[in-house]
Length: 172
Image (cartoon, rainbow, N blue to C red; front, side, top):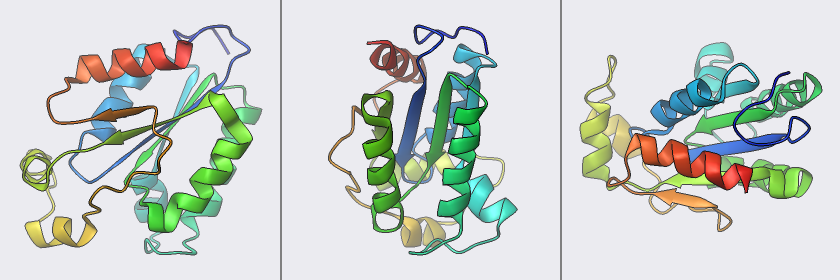
């Protein structure tokens, strides 16, 4: 694969974007993909769990095994950056994310999107297919931090700033 904006071609990064629905993870992931180019693999928890597997989001979900297999596949294909984005709530995905951190070390960066419910709900309503308030309330994970986040974005951080900070942090 070719060189991307994150540094040497032999460097490989895993960027995990977590947070509630409507927080901006998918938008940031797509902008990051556009900035980094074809040497980047984007994995969406929603697509893997809800579309491909049609699986519930609870401890033991088969989405975990497929996410890990896709990350391993991306690594074997020599993608320079693998982006995993989704709610990835700690109660379900925490052990998987801890294992990934153990394996990837400093080459893994976790970013948390920390928006108040009102802001996330407003953003969600702008989506082509918006979720209703009850669904978002059921999914809501307040302060679902892992404790090892490299970056945490609130509602005041612009998309361009988010992408720049993630690229800068990975390159450093």
